[in-house]
Amino acid sequence: MEGDEPKTTLAELGEFALIDKLVRHRTQPSVVLVGPGDDAAVVQSADGRSVVTTDMLVEGRHFRLDWSTPRDIGRKAIAQNAADIEAMGATPTAFVVAFGAPGDTSSDAAIALSDGMWEEARRFGAGIVGGDLVAAPQWVISVTALGDLQGRAPVLLDGAGAGDSVAVIGGLGRSAAGYWLLHNGVGGHDELRRLHLTPEVPYGQGRVAAECGATAMTDVSDGLLADLGHIADASGIGIDVSSALLAGDHAALGAPAAATDQDAWAWVLGGGEDHALVATFPAEVPDGWRRIGAVVEGPARVLVDGAPWSGNTGWQSF
Image 1 (tube, one colour):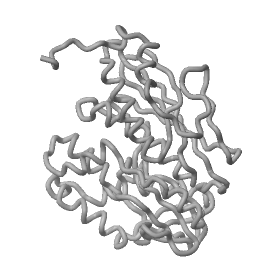
Image 2 (tube, one colour):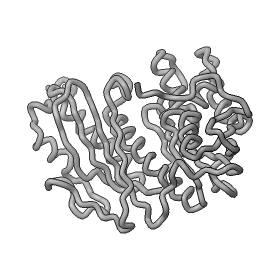
Image 3 (cartoon, rainbow, N blue to C red):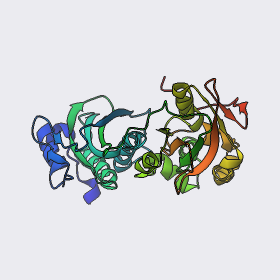
Image 4 (tube, helix red, strand yellow):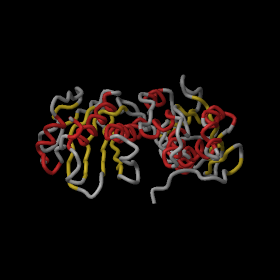
């Protein structure tokens, strides 16, 4: 049977043969002047500035191969880096990827990982322009993303002012709920598990927020309250989040929370990896965004309904 045929491993195939398989038949976007195959890529930045970010995913810490397919992992690796570019008000254009794995890893798995990366990058017209391969004791994926501001000023963390509205686009708490279901082997709620494995970034909305005058912005990667805390600290202001304005997110997680004896508010307020965008606006919020609170005078702090939140506020890397 075909499934019983031995798979070629990375060690057997070799670095350059694998690279050839990964880049063959890929079509780069127009901003890529020199793609994979030379010592470095050349990516055009008509703006004259480049937005750059990098992030790592480590097997067992950020993903599990018994939960995710290689394609899922590839999509997630691109999505979480693209979200950081979006959060600056820029458009993601190109990615450089380094991949470490044991030598006995199937080459088909590496190709599927690349396919997932390309699938996600194509959602917003970007490409994978280069990278590196190395033997490692477990899967490690490092992604560097480039973005184009297209003439706009970057939206930083330090621009929020008292009186601004706080608004979000994208779901909150879904990834945390999905993680809990996967970790505890709870069936059902397939959509939540999917959203943990492959987050849905609101692509293009970073540009929309910037054009609509966003004063500060970030993506919800660590948790809503934790990420709003970065804005509060950088801007020297307070942020007051309204639970009434987050009732829809809470309701969407009510059934899985009840089934697992969990508090849905912990997922909504402290769950990360949704990669929704949250921003502050001095005037009306853009279409599709929803107001969830307000910026108040300092000191720097994040409140829920006017009071400190006593529960978990988000993810810690260490």
